[in-house]
Image 1: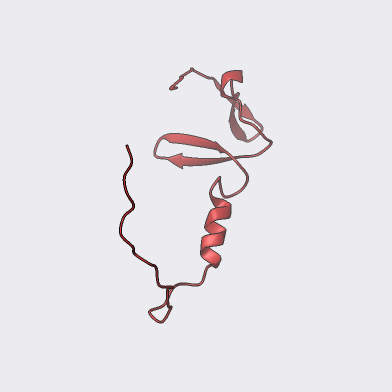
Image 2 (image 1 turned 120 degrees about the vertical axis):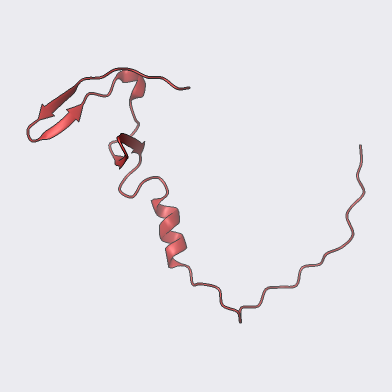
Amino acid sequence: MNIQRKVKLFRNGRNQAVRIPREFELPGKEAVMRKEGDRLVIETGGPGGPNARLLAVLAALRPLSADDAFPAIEDGPPGAVTP
């Protein structure tokens, strides 16, 4: 679904603002905004965006070293294919 709608920009104090039409409402109370060239992208989620938790988990993992051993995996013959 690629819906477009023309919106008006206005000032709210020293900030520029845009009223989000009902059909574009986002759930929750926080969103993340970033600029990509001339585009503004708004995504649901808190600080860091929707992938922030995954990125935090990945950053906390210890890197693998050449000394790390992996368990042996039995590589048996493929099973019979049934139609």
